[in-house]
Image (cartoon, rainbow, N blue to C red):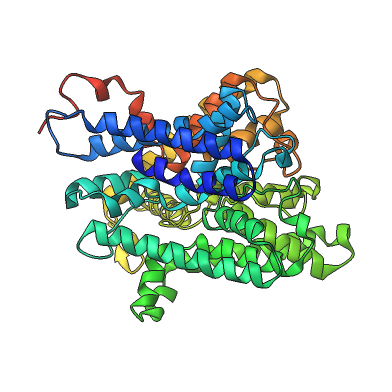
Length: 473
């Protein structure tokens, strides 16, 4: 809460620079309120200070909900998004780097509100608790459980012996890549303000733009190529960048997940470009729009240069499949993650072989090592829970009586932290017409997807809150 209060001072400064005094005062006041709430929470001393897996999940789930609640206050107080459910949805979409929006006219927000809306992407991309580890003196085991609960992907490993140093390395790489992208956008002639907004959306793979037409507003192949490439780069496991820093480029390039990730991208770009070429009459433009849309969807960013909802059925179906696959583990992207999909397919393949040869003993190898049975079991459990959450959310959202395509892809877009779907929630649409109940369910779906399901799911489990359960040794 204290970290969020400090970060709110940035949009307050933007408001002062842009002459938006009322918004600056609102952010300053909200920052004080958030800091006060955080200070009061610090006065509470629990009976035990140990953080195990259960405590790590609960702390992470509650933290993200509280951050979203307080983060939505500037929108509500200013009246620029007066409805609570709309403001909460927009803020959750920002922090979880989803990019789904209820705004019918994005340009209606002033500069300070627009800055905060996009800045939440950058904050949530690497994880605000990971950032907090750099500041807070937590012990190794305690910080490990928090990192595992917040980090995307099947596993979270330490880069160096101390978790605090690992957090510093991750955020260091994240910041350097963000600065490089900022310089490239400025070099292309984009204004500083627009460059910052697009850096936040690209680095966090979020997709909020300060223009209703998204990246298509700039009508520039240069920006399309630069942002498209960086979306893919931010969808790569950040551990591989650390290997590159250690001059172990060969090891990084041999990553099975990395090669599969770029293989999927190459296949999708080429086949979609061929499929949509008749709509363009210009194969170069078809390839460019295909490349940008595939990069945006598989990394779950949500930027758009073309309305892919108008493309042929093959292209639309393939993009929906990419929505499920998502980016690499340990990246800022969402979805199932490429590594988890690979492990699921290899587990299915082994299961089919065992049906034919029941007595056979076969290990599954991944990234040059034998995958532990515990890891494989965790992937299967995750996928089962993922399907149940998807089905449950679709059933609730279907009460709004939207079209089948809109209802299903809206849930897919939110749980996978993508942003746009198809139909009424396509690249040219928004989520404004959904009911308050649907927006709340979709908001929880975004949080569940960003936090790998279990931190949010455990908050609704009665056993989590039984007397002494959270602090037992």
